[in-house]
Image (cartoon, rainbow, N blue to C red; front, side, top):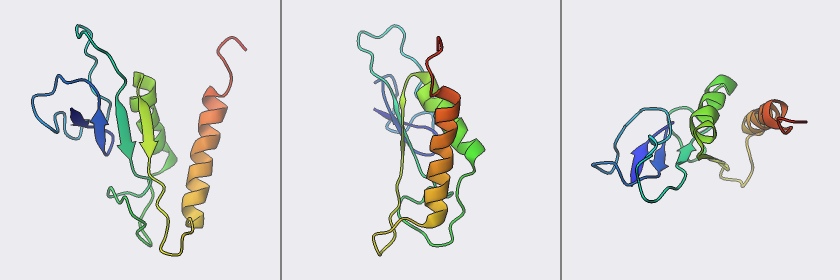
Length: 118
């Protein structure tokens, strides 16, 4: 069952009473520690603010701090993060989007790129 998470659906445990439980919580599904089956939640979010899944010219982008929050509330909760990749009508990636994706990737590598024991 999906639950509402960091801007998108969180697919995980079946403990939710309805299709979109925990709407707007901004995090992965709560753990089901007593369940017989466990699987990680998936949080899908958009780079563009306003939950725009398709390229919207001039749309504001989520800042790095927001993307980091998405990361911590999904990957940091033993789930996975799915972020959109909005291609424009010419088949290209907006340079602003490319910079934001690169900045987010650089942050992940700088923070988590080495094993703890390294």
